[in-house]
Image (cartoon, rainbow, N blue to C red; front, side, top):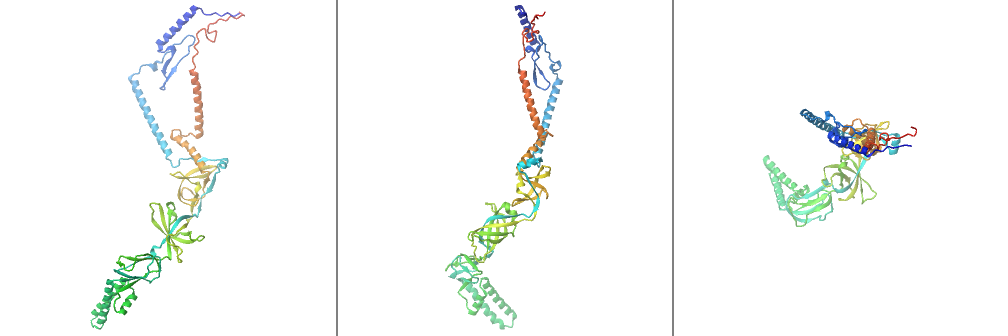
Length: 503
């Protein structure tokens, strides 16, 4: 039978006195109860250190090298170390910023990537070789029929007078070359006719003179009077008729200088006209112009001489051929378009001014290195294509492109004939390339040589370390087992006496 010896009241009293004495000694010795001390762990952070009591209690002492009073020499060294640490931190930050800038503003912020055969099938990746092509395209625009400015004639008078009779009195009327337009009375013209007739009489009178000088002067007067009539738009027939008549005409007839249509008329019977007055405007419609406006990106394609096809709603099912004869040297400020001019033959006058039609200009460029438009990624700052380097490796490359002709871009620099470029799946490749290029950014942040796989593994390890630290923290947060003597789980340490029945 086991017997248990329980402490007496006197034993409990002595035990309490011992506990109080131990607590007082700890307070006087370390300044904190129950042996807790705060010490510098030499890393700038404070760590709470607690030691478990073993049997009764253990006195805690501090390190005299750590807690000794600091002298002036120690304070100076500490300030120098702190200043060095701050300068080193600033220098490292500046170097990291410089590496970041160099990585951010690099020519190609992307990296080569590798795609397996299975991956190529999954993303539908396709390539096409870069070859020389004869690029052809067409430019479509709206054309407007206008008069040929070189075939417009304005009928002006070089003397003043009154309109006595109008022979062509309607706008739009067709006139022939030499057809009478109006009859005009002018006192100045009558006086000029008199001077011419007088000069002729004088010349005939001095023909029998023995002096050659007199005959020459008379001939010069006749020629001067005749030239004056010609300058006033009198024809040789009118001058010959004047000589035959022998007296001046009171009215003079004005004739049409060309064949065409009257597009403007100001002459009316009884109207007083002056030399600056335009009485008729006549246009020859045997050839007309068609004006079309093209956009700015189409300017390199049109230089003059290109053939064009025109269609008009007035003649459905018919096409007409023309030629780009002129490209205007300025851009419309409102529509931001450039005007080009086409010439069309119009013998039957089928094309009327101010008609609208559809214009298709054929563009044929010289053979040049070309790349499909689907292969080009335009970032707004640069244009990039992915070049196949073999064994599933694709390299991003910056290229310089010319104008887009149809479905292709002309290549000015960056590619060579025969190289294969990606035409399908470029955006997925671009995303993967930028993801791989993030390792360069890690290098700029002071993590050079770290790959994406290592970074991911490092993140996983950090996560495990954090979980382990949390578990350790939880363990540290558990209260210490402060069982009193006699109440320990180990009954032998508690002082319990166990009688073995065998004894």
